[in-house]
Image (cartoon, rainbow, N blue to C red):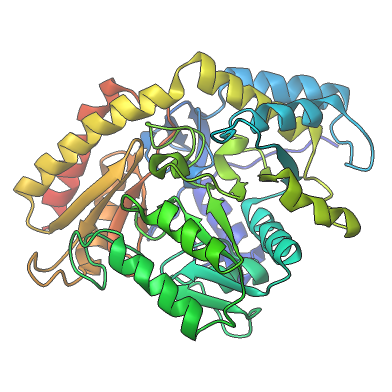
Length: 439
């Protein structure tokens, strides 16, 4: 039977509304539905042929560009040979990919750290596995996470997810939350640095846990939390304090990894910390479903006594795409592009702030940027109405991005890392029009 696809917007929306479960309705971002028919590098086209600049990377999954020819070719070649081979059998593609991923990890001052990889289907599964791995290695149960963190929608990952709207009652326990070191609206005031937030980790370990901690999960740059960078000294300081309590440092690189921050391949490198476990997904496969836990070999070793299995985790087609992503990052100097283009765009965002009073803060690094809206710059009261209005107006300006942050008062920009300097003017002018339309 030949499958046909009806691209009619109204019929697609009606079919989705009728057959999608209620759990998938809230995630629709715009008031009116959109149907995308084509993507190429940093651009998208809807069913009516209108072109958009994708500043969302379709939720950070598209790292090196929509339908990147090298990634597509690698996946197609593998799919035509053997689409799937479960991990109970050997296959060269995931084996090579695991080796290549470990080569991107820091080796330590003595060059003796060995890393191993466990492939998963998604970032949430990678987080779940990292939780199990940390508890199994340390023999402790308690975990720490940041209050505005987002680590995924599965039951276990939700237990680590503190941001409003995601954490639900009845999820697994033994998780304590610490204040996120937000340098704009954090609990210790603007530009307070890392020190008071590190003291919070010590207090939390002493009062809200058994004192025997399995680990702390930290997004190297908070993504859904509104693009919150960790201040200098925070990641290394958090690792020091948690390790002193018997725990591990787990870096969540699902959004900030693969060169997105521009200065480094991995976000945690900005603070010189070497994690014990790293979780990654989204951009790892440039849209193909894939995630991974990369851990120090000795920490992963106790898992040999457990049966841990992800059916599609080392799928050779997805891993072939992942290998191609690493090649493109290296050959096309994608990380350097993220640094240069991100810096140019951030400059333009600062210019927008000088001309639009609704903008309270602009921030980020590389191609991981945000604009936060406030009703008053002195009180910093979140302005969700203006955020929503600008968000909708961006669509009319041909820009796709997302609302994020604990108050949904930030516009998050995490575009494919092939966004070019030629796009910066178009993006800045489109945002300027959107703010003017929203007044």
